[in-house]
Structures are given as C-alpha cells and as structure tokens.
Length: 181
Ligand SMILES: [Zn+2]
Image 1 (cartoon, rainbow, N blue to C red):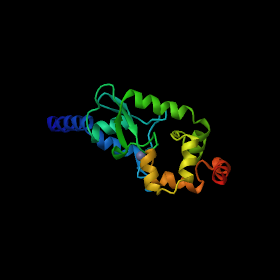
Image 2 (cartoon, helix red, strand yellow; image 1 turned 90 degrees about the horizontal axis):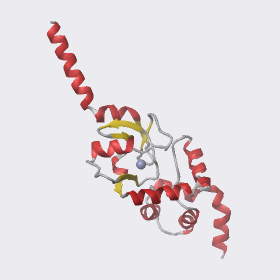
Image 3 (spheres, rainbow, N blue to C red; image 1 turned 120 degrees about the vertical axis):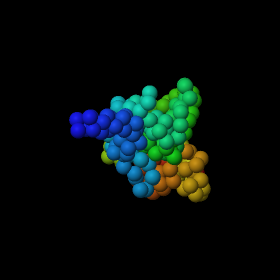
Image 4 (cartoon, helix red, strand yellow; image 1 turned 180 degrees about the vertical axis):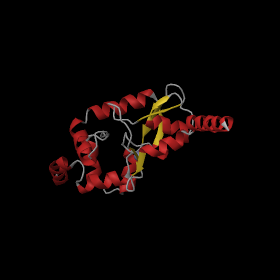
C-alpha cells in the first residue's frame, strides 16, 4: 500500500514538471476582441509576463517555445499585436536582436502614447509601438483597418480604436490640421 501511494506521488511529480502548457493555461485570459492571450500572472518591470519553462523565464518566450518551437540563440520573440502581455503564439514571431532594439527605441520615444495605451488597457503592463506620424497616417488613410493593421503590424481592432479616437485621441486636432492642407 505504501509502495502504491509513493508510486502515484512519483507519477504526479513527473507530470507536474512536464506539463508546461497546462500550468501556462492558468495564467492568461483570451481577449475576444483582439484574440490576444493576455497574461494574468506576474509581470516584470519590462512589461512582459513571467513564466519559467525550459531555459525561458518570460511568458511570451515560454509560449513560443511550448507551442511553436525552439528559439534560435540570439533571436528575440516579438509581438505582431503591440501587446507585450500577449502570449498567443499566433501573435508572436522571431526577430533579430536589431529588430528588437528598433522596437524598443520606438517604444521609448512614445512616452505620451504609452501613457494613453496603459490608461486604455487599465493595466500596468503595456506599451505603444506606433509613432505619432504613423497614427496620423492611419487616421487619414482610406485603406481598410485590416490593410493598415498589416502595414503597421498591429491588430485590426487596434486600428479601429485609433480611428474612432479611443486611442491616441490627443492627436485629433493635428489630424484635422493635416486634413485641411
Ligand atoms: Zn496578441
């Protein structure tokens, strides 16, 4: 009997260490609008979720490793959806360190926009990727939401929110000015 019990416990212990995806599933919520898997677990100061799997400790990298495959040395896992908290493998892609640095630079220049997006999401983990001139281009263009989303590698709902003024609303006066010219 003792042997049987310890055998069961032994199996459980093995399962626990091997079920990354099961553990992972407890820490995100799917956003039905953006289809982002938004991390509900702990986020680090860099805005990325934290999750230990393999050699990875950031949730989006762990997601890539679990659901897509190995991350080659030196490669970064980047977001198509402009949402650092997102761990949906469909929204992730590999980039070089240089891509990642350019992405960060862009985010660093966006302190005003970043504040807006954080307020909009009501979450402490979040950042904007677009520049103000790109936002004005999105607002003025006659291209479809999906087309602009592809062009700027953001989600179509994000384009829609920009166009309706729910995001980047502070740019509306500049847009009017630009349209008048
Ligand atoms: Zn996403």
